[in-house]
Image 1 (cartoon, helix red, strand yellow):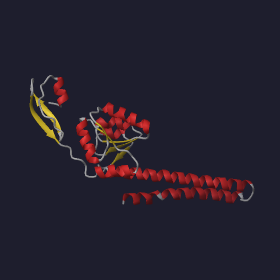
Image 2 (cartoon, rainbow, N blue to C red):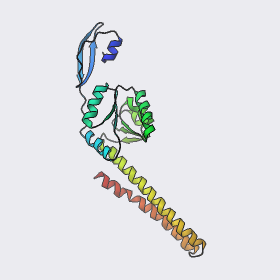
Image 3 (cartoon, rainbow, N blue to C red):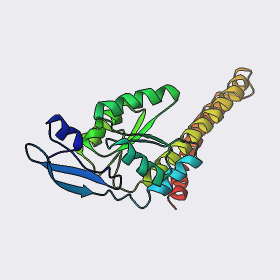
Image 4 (cartoon, rainbow, N blue to C red):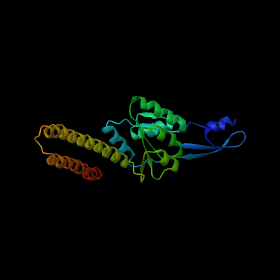
Length: 220
């Protein structure tokens, strides 16, 4: 029992038409195939929406699959993914991630044991909370449920966080540029300068709390 490649390695004769609509598990005796089991993957209903959202964010989606190339391309086409690499073993997926990283930052989403090496190789990796323990261990972010839309939420919130960090650095730097020379030249008393420094720290903290409001807007 196995795929066509494995049965051919066992010198079992395979005389079957090409079938692109599903996945085949072949059953054979010592000489020939005597049975075929057909399986069909069902895509998650939100998958196409997530791919489209990634494209709008100028993120290029890539499909890495252990399935045969033609079957992987069918799935990629149904999702609107142009870059598709099939027939990949776990180590091949990790190598492909390293290759893609030469062109920029790479995020990986996976849920199976076979995805663990690629998840570990990516710059940032997401594992489904319903996935394998090995995939979860290898990932940077674990989604508590299997909703792929949470990936978009995580990306949008991380971008908002980076913007807020830069904003806080700007205001803190501007304060120091203005206040320190003013205090050095005697325009500000030490007490007022100390109070202004404390107020600056408080304002940065309050500004960071605004991220809670941003997250609520993203989740709507």
